[in-house]
Length: 292
Image (cartoon, rainbow, N blue to C red; front, top):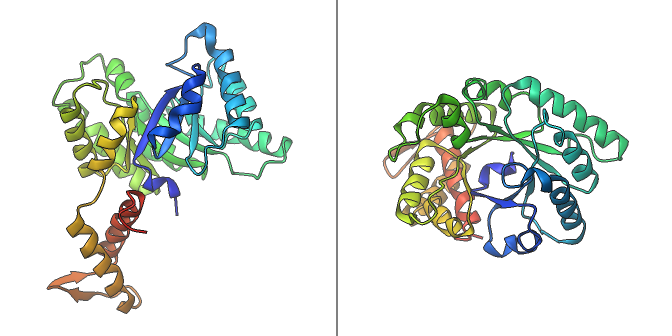
């Protein structure tokens, strides 16, 4: 099973600020994406990389998945970011501006060579692909299925709207098709689907509503740009008590199902899809520490 499916909050943190590299865990995000791309000025790219390398070698991040949003592989910094970070122990790459399966296959081949050269377990370095252009969203399924390394696809809203030359409205109806396509095709591929950031960090009510909406569409998680958003996101992605209780009943009742059959529970038919949904709810409840 893809363990990244249970990650709710993906917190972006600039890699060029030492204090942030050391303190980000305090805010308890489910995953951290240290940013070498948009958040770092051109003149600080290499210094930021060195800071992150040192952090990976000296800081114990525990079980929290650590990603680096590297610079694009078509830039002068991209492959150096990947090479030196993987050699320093990084296991997760956030690939920006991924537009098709060839981008994934190119990175996959490069990672395989890096792993072989450095005696790293083959296939252990994972990829989260950021879909930030119309062609990327169009190719979502092929990107998600391009390699076993791909653990998730995410929606880069700011670049997507900029590519289309449109404004991001308050209602965001202009993003519904793209969001829905990413969710459905990530689900088909069995990888995580991550909704894009909400940039107005002061409007907590609107952010909570957007998190609820993202979850209702089927996104497995959402990106954050500020630690204050994490608790709000987790609240929106936490199952209700009655749903947890009913899901536990479903899991218990499912022990009596054999060979994909069905049973009745409280007047409702329980089959494999219902059981799988219950398992996801239980996983989220455990993530929220509502269950052990």
